Amino acid sequence: MSSPIRLKRGEVRYQHIDSPVGRLLLVSGGDGLRLIEFEEPWHPAAMDEQWREGDDDVLAATRRQLGEYFVGRRRDFELPLAPHGTAFQLQCWRTLALIPYGETWSYGQMARHLGQPTATRAVGAANGRNPLPIVLPCHRVIGSDGSLTGFGGGLPVKKHLLMLEGALHEAPPVADLFGG
Image (cartoon, rainbow, N blue to C red):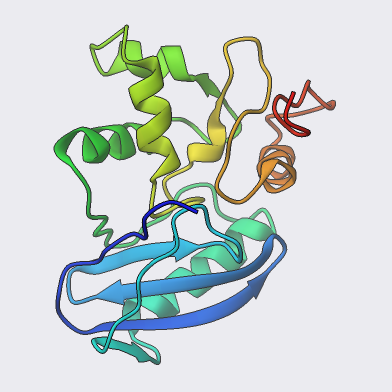
């Protein structure tokens, strides 16, 4: 397990919700939605004394919009987002929001869009730290050969999300599923 994601100081609200892809942790702060975390995250958030279980307008809107997404009634999210990361990570995460619903980009396409065509691995690493999966759709980024590659929620969840969006019509090769 790698180092946890650290959120900026200040009180945050959090709650767990059940979804078609498992239990999700939602976290908001005064600046917007900060985190959506899967049950078994690669980079778990570090809770501290500033965290308060509860609800607020951002979490209520996130729950509603995720519910609409999972039943096919929402393609884009309209939430105040407040991810925290490096300048390059933030640039990558903003680019994720440009990938249309039902489409996929390769890591190379994303690097070229960022004007850094040799930064494919750096793009992959930044996407791996995306604190707002689903809303900032890192599941829409796939291998250059069309294979499903790393995803913080697991490859079965990535496949489920892409099938929900109509981006997958048949099972693609799944790289690294069994370490291969």
